[in-house]
Amino acid sequence: METAEFKKIIDEIVISNGMKKTRNSYYLDGKDLLVVLGLQKSSYSSGYYFNLGYIIKAINDKQYPKYTDGNVRLRFDFNINGKNIDIIDVQDALKEQFFSELVRNIKHYISPITTVEALKNLILEEPVLLYQTTLVTKQYLKIE
Image (cartoon, rainbow, N blue to C red; front, side, top):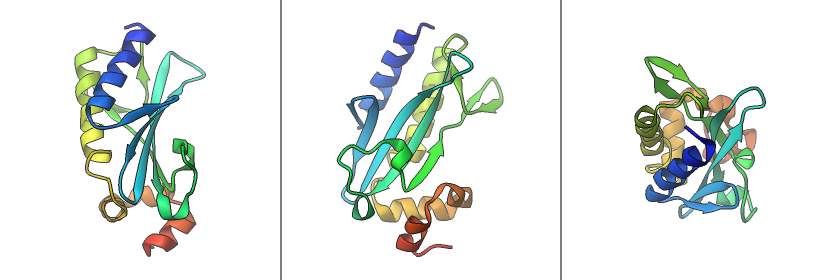
């Protein structure tokens, strides 16, 4: 697959699932939470990482934060050909598998996480996210 086609598919999927594209990131604006999805090009291959940042509005005042500003951050993983990977190689990506895995990640990590309470519940369900949660955020959420 060509890079332009790859990015067009991403735009279609992500935007059709409620996010808005601004600059090079996608945003889902909730009442008290902003979810930011950004692509990161690998320096070593034609692959891309899908990085997600949850921005709690009460403790972050940037208008257009990047995923790196996230109070909680994570990277999508993809089950491709029976293997869990965190990078999608544009050259090798099979459209159908990539499409369904991207939608699966969005349905799990973006669509239902539109409030601080939903984010807290996600962290409690997946405690490994505590490693990617800032201390200020842990204190704000009263966890750990």
